[in-house]
Every structure is written in structure tokens, then in C-alpha cells.
Amino acid sequence: MSTATLDKDLIKGGEFLIKESDFHSIVFPEQFTEEQRMIRDSVREFIEQEIYPVTERIEKLEEGLTPSIMDKFAALGFFGTHMPEEYGGSAMDFITNSLIGEAIGPSGSFSVSYNAHTGIGMLPILYYGTEAQKKKYLPGLIDGSLKSSYCLTEPSSGSDALAAKTTAILNAEGTHYILNGQKMWITNAGFADIFTVFAQVDGNKFTGFILERNMPGLTLGAEEKKLGIKGSSTRQVFLENVMVPVENVLGEIGKGHLIAFNVLNVGRFKLGVSCLGGAKKLTEISVRYANERQQFGKPIASFGAIQHKLAEQLIRCFVTESATYRTAHLIHEHVHHSMNAGKSYAEAKLLAAEAYALECSIIKVIGSETLDFCVDEAVQIHGGMGYSEEGSVARAYRDSRINRIFEGTNEINRMLMLNTLFKAAMKGEFDLLTAAMAVQSELMNGVSQDETYNSIYTTEIKAVKDLKKALIMLLGVAGQMAMSGQLNLKEEQEVLMTLSDIIIEIFNAESTLLRVQKLRADNNPEISIYEDILRCYLHDANLRVYKNAMDAIASFVDQGMQPALISGVRKYTKYPLQNVKELRRNIAARMISENTYPL
Ligand SMILES: Cc1cc2nc3c(=O)[nH]c(=O)nc-3n(C[C@H](O)[C@H](O)[C@H](O)COP(=O)(O)OP(=O)(O)OC[C@H]3O[C@@H](n4cnc5c(N)ncnc54)[C@H](O)[C@@H]3O)c2cc1C
Image (cartoon, rainbow, N blue to C red; front, side):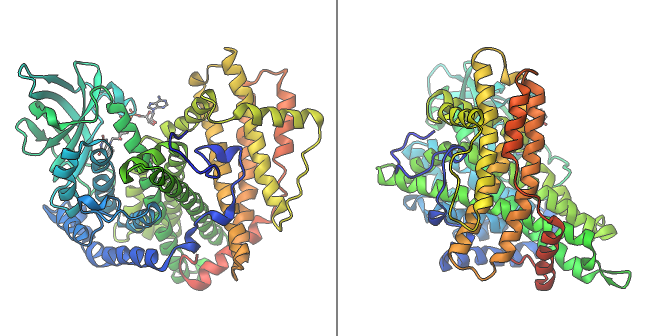
């Protein structure tokens, strides 16, 4: 799925489903350098000192407060860590930028303002701007003197973004486009200086434009009254005969969809990684409260029901973290190879995000859903205090919910995963056919290929491989039926949802397995807790894949074919049952004794 010249060993987007990954080369959090950790710690310190003390004021949208905190963050260089040096950035690598995004995650509304500015706000100009546009805008966006926003959504077009009605008509002199329309839900609109706006040139050529705050005809609606992230500015943007110089066309006329979608790929990753930071923080808050709160004469952390919740929070965070940094590593390597092949920093990053669009969608979905899970359990662990506005978890509960909605809803992202895979298969970039035939032949012959892995994790390695085979079997049948006209997958969204959930389980399970293999290879002294997490997750993932696969078979396969596929799914979901109660108790014990997020 990539056009860059790549090292043959670098696994391409989606290829994790049909190829082996080598754990030795992947950078997981345990391999972060001292410098990376220091950068992360300085972001955490900034949040502690500059954001937490004024959270209430941020939440009330105090005039000028968020922009002034953004200025301080920019002054420390944090708006330019993902920008080229020639415009004032520090061009840090993708993994370090991910770490920064994770560290900013727990800051709630501020993280939304930060992500919108540094992601969907700045990246369109970096990726698609002309040299003149980059020189004009990027230095200010990096030093914080300019703040940015991204105006795609309209009242009648959200998920169906390309159906935007905003118009752009070239004036008679050919010097300006005249923009008319209305944008909705625009993050940072209240204080942004730069607005990337999408409009239809001549009614049907979807195109990006760079607008400035002081352009006559650009006005703002009132602040939206939202469920959460109340401290982030969200307004409508009205455009009435706004004269935009032709020099401010972003990218090519009619090619705005490339900007919108490619910027969203990175935006999705950034959102996922920042959710991960929030989820880990809430897990830490949960264990502290569970240790402190006494009921029936003991801390509530001593109860099995609470230990289950704590352990599950940690498991989901660890799994999400493993998948997230595996993706960060893939993107990082892709950027590196593209730059070696002569691409610029910006081009290389764009190509990488495009190449791993599927993985970016996974990270968006799992990050937001892990955060929702952790915050929900945090509220439950806090009991009545969780429901009180006096504590911080009630706010986090409201803040979390948006993440499943923006940057492409989780439904849209789930469908994108399958679309990306099938498109790549049609183009011959993802060899689904060969993989499906191998699984079919294995099933028909009734024997498995030789599967001795010479590893202490043989059972787990086989389990993950088997889950892949179950999926490939289903994708192969769905693909064949689609090609012969028996199945219109676009109309079978329920099936797409179950298949995308299987893809997610596989990526999560394998990422966790690879990380645990690496931890063992590195003689990590605390390997047992990591192994407990792996086994507990695999136990659950195996059962969830079984259920999803059976749902899919029952939904799109005719009865004659069902028995063969059902027996295939049974064969490929045989990971032995684990004593998940004991595993979770072990995990919780570690959390409780350290009174924090322990990994
Ligand atoms: C606080 C906030 C900040 C935002 N910031 C920005 C911003 O800075 N810039 C910007 O441009 N936008 C922004 N948005 C808009 C956001 O991206 C959209 O809300 C989102 O894309 C969903 O669009 P929608 O609200 O129109 O929902 P709809 O598209 O109407 O979706 C409603 C429901 O239908 C489902 N659905 C829609 N289409 C399909 C389909 N084909 N198949 C199956 N299900 C479908 C969705 O998954 C969802 O569950 C923001 C929104 C909010 C709430």
C-alpha cells in the first residue's frame, strides 16, 4: 500500500495479517531512550504545573487562557517537534512525537486544542502547501504566534465529508476565489488565526484553501455547549463572500479529498495515542482510590470484583500501548526508508501515514475504546464520588466520549479497515488470494503445516497464527463471493463490523505477543506480569474472535457452506482456556502494591 522504495523486510500496511513480524527490530516502550523519556517527562511536568492548577478556568473557556498556555507550550518547542527544521521545527522522529502525544493525553480539553493545532491544523500546510505557503505560515504555527483550525464538517456533511456544500468561485479577474458556506464543530475556531477550509470549486471540485481570521466575511458562531471537553473552543465558521487569494489554494483544485483523508490518517493516530495517555492516567487514579477507599473494614482494592476491573484496565492499556508503539515504529521505519530514498521529511511522513492507514484506524478505534472502558471503570471504582463534579473522573468521563466520534467515527474507521484491505488485494499489493488458498488447502487436507516454533511461547504464537487463518478464511470467502456478485459487502456493514473487530483482535494480540517475546529475550526480570497480561488477553481475544467469526458465517454464508467454515473457525480458535481469575488477581496485586500504573 505504499509507493515509496522500501526495505524489503519492512512489513507493509495490513501485511501483519499474512506475514510474520520480527520482534527483535520493534521499538516498544521499554526501548525508549533516555532522551525520549526526558522529553516525555518535561511534557508531564508542563501539564502538572501549567494545566492542572487552572483546569476549572480552562473548562469555563476563560478568554485568552488556552491560547496563553499554548504559547508557553510553543515556547518550549512543542509545536514544532514534528516539523522540519527549515521552518523552525525540530523534526523529531515519529516515536518521540508519539510519546509527546501520549504525555499530553491526560490534559483533557487542552489535549484537544493541542492535537487540533499540531495535527489537522498544521499538517495540511506541511503536506500540501507550496513553498511560499509553508514559509508564510509554518514558522508562526510553530512558534505559537499563529493558531490553527481545520474546517471540513458542515451541518449536512459529517461522515460524508466530500458532500460539502461550501462553494468557491473564481472571480472574473482570476485573482481570488469567493467562498460561501458554513462549517460546523470547528475545534480552536474561537482563537484560530488560520482556517484550512474545504469547498467545492465550481460546485463539484472539492478543494482546500488557507483562510486567515481577518479576511472579511469570515465570522464565527457562539461556543457550542458540549457534553465534555468544555475547555476546548468549538464553533461554527460562517463564510460570506470571503475573497481568498488564488495563492491560498491548498494543493490542487479538485484534490482536496487527498488532503482531507491523508491528514486524517495521522490525526487518527495522534488521537489514539493521546487516548492511551488518558487511559493510563485513569488507571493510576483508579488504583490509588481503590487502595484508599475503605468499605466493610478493608480497602475496596482487596475485593475480587474491583481487582478484576483494575487488572482489566491495565491489560487493555498495555495491549493498546503495544499496538500503538508497534504502529509508531512501522511509520518511523517507513519515514526513514523514504527519506533515504530521497523524499523530504514532509513527503516521507505523508507516504508513511498513507501506507499504514489501516493501522492508524485501528489505533484510533482501540485508543478511544480503551479510554472509554478505563474511564467508565474509574467512575465505577469511585462509586458516588465518581459521579461528583468535585472529583476529576466525572469530567474525564464526559471528555472521553468525543473520541469515538471525531476524526472519523469508529464505525467509519472500522469500515475503512476492510475497504483498505480489499482495495490493496484488488491492486495485488496485499496477497489475500495466496494466503486464502493456503488456509483452504490446510483445511481440506486436515493437517496443519509443521508448527513447532522453538519458543517458550509456542502455544501463543500458534494461537495468533490461527486467529489470522480464521480471518483469512473468512476474507477469502467474502472476497470470492463479492467478485462473483453473490455478496455486496458495502450493503453488509454488520459483517464488515465483525470482520474489522477480528482484525483489531489479531493486531492487538500479536503486538502484545511480540512485546512479551522481546521482554523475555531481553531477560526482563518482571516477565511474569507481562505473560499474565498476554495470556489473559489471548484467552479473551480467542473467544471474541470465535463469536465474531460465527456471527459473520451465520450472516453471509449460505447454509451449504457453513459447516466447513464453522469447523475451520473451531480449529483456529483453540487457545487453551486460562484461569483468568488468577491471572487478573496477579496483575491487580502488582498494581495495588505499587499503588500506581506499574508498567
Ligand atoms: C467536539 C467536536 C469537535 C470537532 N472538531 C472538528 C474540527 O475541528 N473540524 C472538523 O471538520 N470537524 C470537527 N468535528 C466534526 C466531526 O468530525 C464529526 O462530528 C464526525 O465526523 C461525525 O459527523 P456527524 O457529526 O455529522 O455525524 P454523522 O456523519 O451524521 O454520523 C451519525 C452516526 O451515523 C454513523 N454513520 C454515518 N455514516 C455512516 C455510514 N456510511 N455507514 C454507517 N454508519 C454511518 C456514524 O458512525 C454515527 O454513528 C468535531 C465534532 C465535535 C463534536
